[in-house]
Amino acid sequence: MAGNKHHRDRAIDQQAPLADCGFAGIDFESAGSSGGATDEPVQVGLGVMESAGGSIDQLFRSYLSPASEVVWRSGRVHGITPQDLVGAPALVELWGEIDPRLRRRVVLAHGAGTEKKFLRAFPLHGFGPWLDTLMLARRTLPGLADHSLRTCCTALGLEDEARVICAPVCGGLDWHDALFDTVACMLLFRAVITSLDLWDLPVSGLVEMGVVKGL
Image (cartoon, rainbow, N blue to C red; front, side):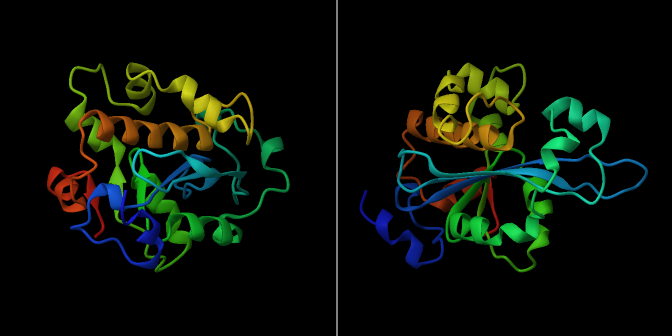
């Protein structure tokens, strides 16, 4: 795919085909909020796909230290306990892990609002454009009961591959782990774009579809 090796040297061109772009995935799990308190992240997962339809690597997974305790209903979803967070870094301490992965790449997230919200910890970071795989799935996978990440990936048979990719970092990961969901999101994007033969589509084409923002 000509041009892939150059994507780190320039900002994303909205006329560039997807085949010439690099992609980064990100997911946060959160503490939840109660009593008007601000929600905070308690885990982050990151991954990179350097080439069109290529491998997913540069994986990173970390718990994060929040100022408040994990709300019961959130803990019930992701299973993160106070013990998991002992000694965890604050999000702002992980700039050195986040910036090299997200910089000058199309950023993938499933329901990207949460990820954008928590990345405000880094003012003027400039990450993006953002591709929301939730919106992509809604436009390209009709007939599903819902378009949650799990439903979409199960329908496309991607769960086992996500587990295999995550295993070298941490074995036994599952849904609502930030790294597992990051990898699943990236697999969903890769599978949809490949199945529809859209790697030659310019980024602007996905803007017109309403699944890419932030150019």
